[in-house]
Length: 500
Image (tube, rainbow, N blue to C red; front, side):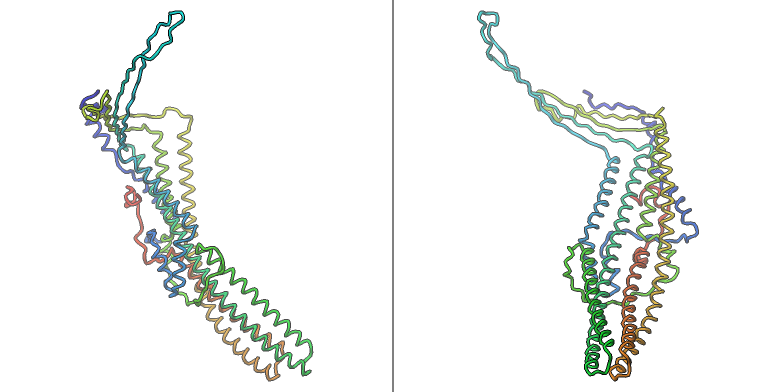
C-alpha cells in the first residue's frame, strides 16, 4: 500500500515545458483559405444566417400573406410533419456525438465495493476401518473479506488530437442543424405552395361551374331555336357536345382539387382524407427583393452554411490523420485507492490514496503504409468536399438570380394577362348579346367564350405561379436576409470557440 506518496513519471519542469506547447490548433484557418478560393469573384461582405431552430421565425416569414389559416397550417406542419421529426433525431445524434467527444476533456472517476465470503466444512470418521465409517460434518470455518477501490485518471491533450476531434464533432453538429433548418424551410414552403394550389383549384372549379351554367343557358336557347326550325341540327349537336365537355371539365377539376387537398394534408402530417376546408384567396405576393441582393445573401442559405461547416469538419479530420505519423506524446494524471480487510473498519480510509503522474512517447515504426493511406484518403476527401462546396455556391447563386428573374417575368405577364382577360370578357359579353339577338352564330360564340375562359384560367394560374415563385425566391435567399449576421472568419473560428 502506498501512503500519501506521489510517483512522478516526469519532472515538474519537463511537464511544464510539454504543456506550454498545448493548445487549440488553427484547424479551421486552412479551410477558410481554401473556401475563399472557391468564392473568388463574389463580394467578400457576405452575410450568414443564424440557424436558430426557432419555429416562430419561419412562421413569421409567411405572415406577409395576412392569412391566418395559412399560418396555422405552417405551424402545424413544423410541429407534426414526420419527416421533420426524423430529421431532428439526426441533430440529437450529433449532439450526443459531440458530448461523447468532449468527455475527453474531463477526468474519469470510478469506484467499486465488494465482499467475498469463504466457508470450509470439517470432516470426522475412519476411512481405513472395515467397513469404512462414512465421513460426517463436524465443524465449519467462515472468512469474509471486504474491499473498496477508487480510481481516477485524466489524459492531457498535448498533441491537439482531442481538440481536432471536438472541432470536427462541433462542426458536424452545426452542419446537421443547418440541414434540419433547410428541411424545416422546405416543409413550410411546401405547405404554402400546397395551400395556394388548393385555392387555385377551387377558383378553377368555380370558373368551370360558371362555364357550365353558361353552356346550359346557351343550350336552352339553341334547343328552342332548333325546335322552332330556325337552326340546323348541327348547331344543336354542337351545343350538346360543348355541354358534355363542360361537365367533364368539372369532374376533372374536382379530382385535381381533391388531390391538392390530400397533398396539403400529407404535408401537415395528417392522413389524407380530403377533410380540409380552405376558405382563403390568392393574395398579392410581396415586392421583389432589391437588385444586387444575391451576392449578399448566398451564405444565409442553410445548404451553403452546411457545406462550409462540412469543410471545417473535413479539415479537422484531416488534421487528426496527419498527427498519426508523428510521435504521440501523452501525459496523464491519476489517483488510485485500494483498501481491503476482514472488516469494514477503515474500509473507506484515504490513508492508502496514491497519486500518479506520467508521460509517454510512442510512435508507429512500421504499419505497412496504413497511416499513409488514411492521410491520402483524408486529403482526397478534402479536395472532394472543396469541389462540392464550390458547386454548392454556384448552384445557390444561380437559383437566386434565376428566381428573381422568373418572379419579375411573372409579374410582367400578370399585367398583360389581366388586360387580355378584361378584353376577352368584354368580347364575350358582346358576343352573348349578339347570339341572343340572333346575329351571332353558335360556333363564333363558343370561340369567343373559349378565349374568355382560357384568359381567366391563365390569369388564375399566373397569380398562383407568382406566389409559388415568391416562395421559391424566399427559399433561395435562405429566408429573411435582414436577420443575417456578419461573415464568419478564420480568426473567430480557428480556435474552435465558435463551433463548439
